[in-house]
Length: 169
Image (cartoon, rainbow, N blue to C red; front, side, top):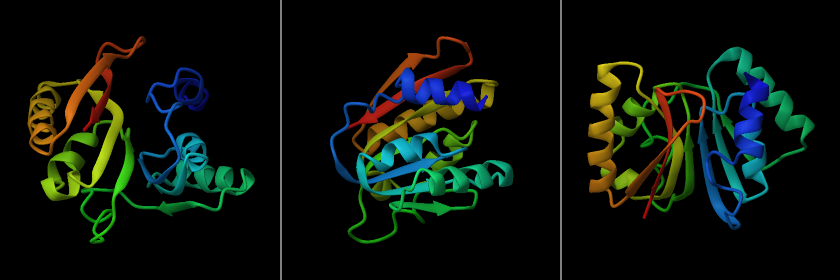
């Protein structure tokens, strides 16, 4: 799966970020082995990389060290809300990448609208494995719209129950 993830992120540009200009901060929730965080570190002054799976976390740390990236901060815990990450008064996020196997819904739903307004663009995956996820998508969509985002989705070419999404101002 790690090779597939590398293909999606680096070759297919599934998160539509290859044309991203230099920016201040990118947050990567669901960092896995660090492919996106390492790529993003060349685009941003600071990258916050969130991963809590111990096996992936050790690979994430190893990959960051061997890529000689010094602008990536790792948060080695499960994220329940963006409020804790973007709690600083002047903290803003140029890009949030969120791909955490269905936990996108509670993270976005638990985040306050003022926190969401600190984010310029969100990219990630959405999962539709069951009716709850389909209902949560409706709630997330409403919340993102109320925070000033326009939501766009596109199909995952391999999985019918997963789609990519982008929310931008």
